[in-house]
Image (cartoon, rainbow, N blue to C red):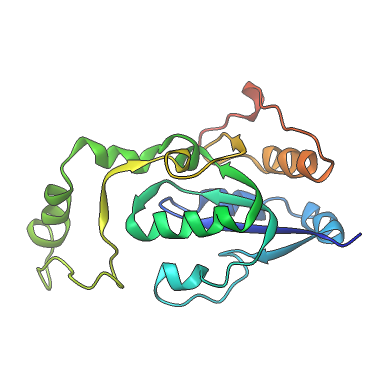
Amino acid sequence: MGKVRIGTVWLGGCSGCHMSFLDLDERLIELAQVAEIMSSPITDWKLHTPVKEYQDYPEVDISLVEGAVVNTDNVEVLKLVRERSKILVAFGDCAVTGNVPSYRNLFKTDDVLNSVYLDKATHNQMIPSDRVVVPRLLNKVVPISHVVKVDYFMPGCPPSADSIWYTIKCLLEGKEPEFSKEHYRYG
């Protein structure tokens, strides 16, 4: 039997979940014995546009998706990753609930763009029109389950390395992860 194929994805979030993934430390060696990381922001060379980064996303057994869905590129990437994943895991609270990125929902999208690119900018005051450089923001930030079917929801902001390891081991062993309050972590 070949190795389990794993991919990880980073949408609208801070990358804290991927930093916790790196905190697996020596468990990464154990993971490498039974699984292969096929695609990840940690391991891949990236182009400048997020959608292009994921066009070659491989067929995988397990995808861990970090971050909320904040723009049109996130929607496209998420749908592609769902199509190519047997199991899709919402990786951390931004993916599970929208978390901090969803604070933008308190404001109108135009007001956010005007504030960032016009009112508070000190140089080049203009709203970017190149959608390759700055994808169009969605009117509302949403958790990934609002766009695609999610198989498992891994809580935490970010999830601890122990929670990540628990989830991956359960999935590798064909078990369903069951999260309790000890798996919730904030900060």
